[in-house]
Image (cartoon, rainbow, N blue to C red; front, side):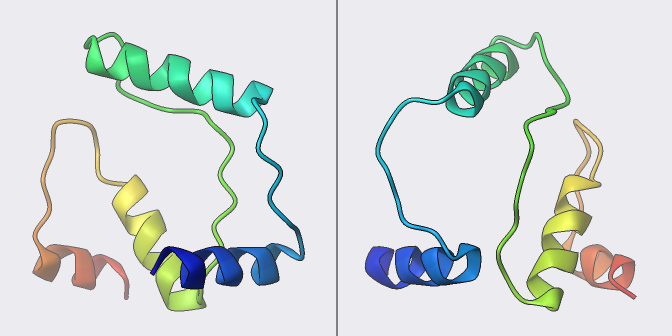
Length: 81
């Protein structure tokens, strides 16, 4: 499915991939390292979600689940309305 996902992202962003290290990738690695060392609970990396309105609502609902909390699919679906 990688080719399909890559094609969808490139089309949705009207962009092409360039493999290189960037500031946002460096920040992402740093924040993930901090998270796995139990030094970070929130992320502030800029995200650009490429998906349908429904997908974006689901992703935002997932982002809104607080650190250390869980949410069932039923609870998540209720949060979407």
